[in-house]
Image (cartoon, rainbow, N blue to C red; front, side, top):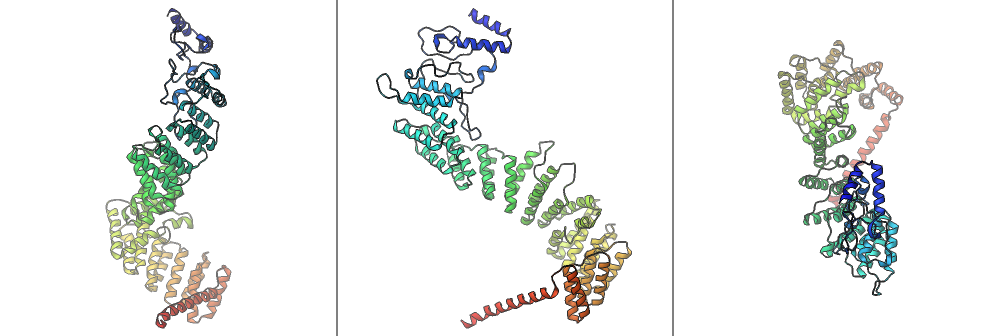
Length: 631
């Protein structure tokens, strides 16, 4: 005891390198030539075997090798150790290996012929702990060729077989080789354990053979209690089926796992969700996420992003909403969150919300978009347009008007024609116009009164929203209601009409053949300092064509081209068609020259094709009506 206390005092005075050298020196002086140290430094007489105890060194050198084997999907090569292969076979007297310490015995110091089954397992375990896989296999091959003291061939026990399978697995053996070892075990009367089959599953997992993995799992389920599948076995098989996109099989094994009171790991759940996303089984993913929520398991961010994209492609609003709620809940506690999803993907989610009329999904997607772009810049106008579209289809007009107000505050001063279209009710805000017009006069009046309430409460009223109401009135051919709304822009809201306001009213006047009012409104536009755009000229041409005034329509067309605008083919087609009906061949030839000038499909070519299609349809209808009569 005094010598031991002296060693402790000496170690405190040494540095780490000196303590390490002293430790190795003491290890080489093991008692009895067995390479081990008895606890206390003095051997106990009459005791066989050895015990690897704590040396006097306190450095980390002795704790580098783990002794526990963790069979998980995430760790493909667990650290070896003798105690990891627990079985019903009893250990020899005095044989134990505390976890966390590297054995200081040299590998295979005892001759192989003098080893019994437990001794062979000890030597193979030491070789595994030193990462000597080939040495482990060599020990087994030499030992099985020898005989015991009675002259009978050596028969390995379950520990030896499991150690051999572990070494083969670490060497990258093919599953067929592993199966041969298992069949040899069965021939020798050794019953495989669940650890044996787990090694097989690892080997099959490397080759991505999910069907073979299912066969192994079924064999484990039919085996005795010592080989029943544990959570690791189920996790291997479920994850492998998900990787091979065999989602029904993965779900079946998950159900078996629940029946055994086992819960899949987080990695397994994520693999199943990824498999569902890649085969577009989003409704199945929703059910899996509900199970994860019941077990308080949160999917990974990348898994959720792929799931959202898959749900967007299939217009599954429920799956997209569930995944977005997870994303937003994970991101909220973080003060600074990097880009989670690109704006294009979020805009696609808003499109799904619009097609499914899901306002909750639109709000979740908008929160994610705000989180993704951060506070340094505003979202792209396409994001605002998609948000307005989603809120309009779900008839959330209050939120849509607020989104338009925010949009107008950011992009209300256009610098070019492209920016002018951002707040146009004819293009960007057309979904809101359609949603309002589908509700009829009552819906349009309700939207107008909501805007009036916003103005009375001091909230900013976006002019673009009023323009949408005017164009909605034009869509239901109500020119009087459109004109009254136009007048309220200045009288009620204290705003000044813009080009879109006048264009919306021109649409209403043109549809109702109020050409005189349309001409006066066009003159008012020029007098008020507003520059007519391409749509203003086209609406005036349409109004004159409906009124059968070819001369005025031609004059507007000339003014339009003088202003630098290119007429669309639809304008030239309608004007040319009206000129043919009125017998103005000179104007028709002039318009045909414009068709060639702007490289449009010629009027007569399109007209001939239209007549051919109409004639074919009429002939088909006549034949279908005559067949029942003949019968």
